[in-house]
Each structure stands twice: as C-alpha cells, then as structure tokens.
Image (cartoon, rainbow, N blue to C red; front, top):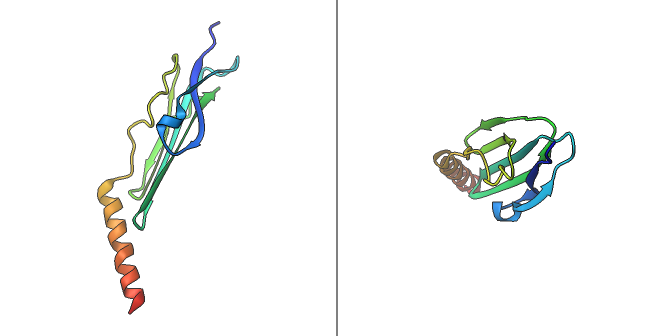
Amino acid sequence: AHTLICFSCSDASSNWACLKPVKCGENENHCVTTYVGVGLGGKSGQSISKGCSPICPSAGINLGIAAASVYCCDSFLCNISGSSGLRASSTLLALGVLVSFFYVLRARE
C-alpha cells in the first residue's frame, strides 16, 4: 500500500502558508482543504486548513457575506489549491458594507 502525501496547515490566512507536505497515516486515504471566508462591515478575512483525513467530507455553503467549503481528493499533493472555487459573493459583500455604512450613519443622528 502506498502512503498518501498531502499539504498541511491550520487556520492560515493565505494559501501560501499551506504548502507544507506531510505523510498521511495508514488509514488516511484523503487530502482535505477547508476554506472559510467572511466579509462584513468593510472587513473581510479567510481561513484555510489542509491535511489528511480518513473520510471525504466534501461540502460547501455560500451565504453571500460568508462562504465555507470542504474540498476532498485522494492523489499525491492534490490539495494544492486554496479552495474548491467557493467564495463569498463580492456583490453581496459590497451590499453588506453599504448596509453597515448606512446603519452607522443613522446611529449617529
């Protein structure tokens, strides 16, 4: 049996911090990338985690101001990308910023 090698990191703000290869355990047959992105009130951030996993929990959700995805693959260093293409919508992020801005202005009156 061959040993899988995946990229690994925990709670990184950029994919560049997630390029450290690790050897997976005997029962870990999948590489996993977890991406969480949030944008609210003019601020946005993202968190990327990667590693080996015995299961393949592929999933994704996009709520406009927040997005989360779990990408799964099972070949040598296959989890190189930052996410599976699921990102918070820039239009809805901008709308959230505008709503926050107007809320702050109204609160000052």
